[in-house]
Length: 592
Ligand code: VG1
Ligand code: CO
Image (cartoon, rainbow, N blue to C red):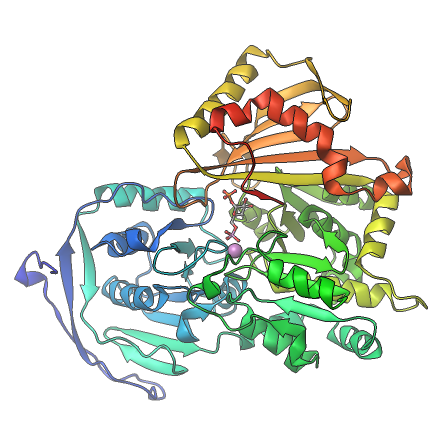
């Protein structure tokens, strides 16, 4: 039961009709604001990308309300416009109504909401920017599974369209620790399925088409005419398949691939968003996007791609060809000038998250671009973009994007690849595919073999012990100059340096410490250990390994299988971190 602290907090609202054109769906005219007493919940700390917990946790009485009120207590949204979007996962429609009620009580003037609570993360970023909103609340746990027993998430984005920076998320967390009440209006639910404007208590609500603005944005970036003519002249030897994994990108992909590019319906699959993602794991990697991999292999599809639950990740995968995200962003950076957006605006700078391979650094060096290494999480790219110093960036976790918005963008990356392949094939008599582009790139820049091992939902104590042990070696320098030899390959690696990554934002000088333990070897190879900030239960340890091979290593070496190329280094990394001992597990949950 809701408890009202005192009756004088009731306030009647009588709305005067809008002064301009009457809104078509005006319905709620009188409402009252109530103040409900509540108690703080532990652990409402936003992680790498918002607050993510099990749905059951969010369903506890006042849990979601507290967090939403904490957002409003940390920002000044009075009289402002706020965007609400998300991947449509289980518990989203209810939460949209909660945000409308609490947001309205906190003085939000206007809400822009994606139809059926759907706006992909990149589309929401675009809508915030395009309509000059104050910020947005995104209901998503991204690639985490959805459904009554799975995950939900709430993320706040600021006016540049990007995830709130740490000073804002820290403030929200502080508020959640002391919250004693939240404000709410009593109002009937808004029909999220009907596009149009309505008044809602003291506020206005605008339900918008989830797809239109985003398609228009991509049309302004890529050479669609070139892509279209390339695809139509290669109907027989260049099959395309996009897999939405039942996440939010379905309707966007349908608009782009079928309507705009004129590809057959069979070029998209799993493109109806489902609240539980069809009971799948909407994460575009070789393990979870098996629905894509199987069909691509079976039907000899040259160009396949998939996206995650909220549409900000991507995987590029063609028949016998897998592009690591670290290579993908480097290749897009190398080919940038075939993309009209960069041809016109130029490339201002490049960046990657710390664990991402250094492939993009090599492109920056060769082309004379400024480049940056930031901590994990897209929020760190925003300041650089706003300052006009960053155009293209990426993360090893299947995140690629540019300064067209302030989130990573799955379908943008897919279109970038199609644009590049269309341009590469322009004057070629033989079809140039994904592997041809990769090899040419390696022959120019060398190859950074890269892989990530995830140990999901391990005991937090074991994860902490692993980190503590590395920190101890860091302080005592006990690992420095030690040489480790892989038993199976016989390769030796000597530790040159061990450090804990910290970042000072070049624009606002804010400092983010403790971003992962990095072991650098004398041959330039790297191993990074990091605790995940997006897991919803227990701890997840990530181990990232990278080994560079120079362009002149020879074709056989450059084309080697990733697992082969990294075998020795992985063995050494596991041995010197004592990972298996600390975590009590033998094998990673996922290898990407
Ligand atoms: C993971 C990835 C990180 C990414 C984040 C959000 O974070 O490693 O690169 O930015 O997910 O992506 P972590 O802290 O679990 O390693 V998404 O698509 O979940 O918004
Ligand atoms: Co995502």
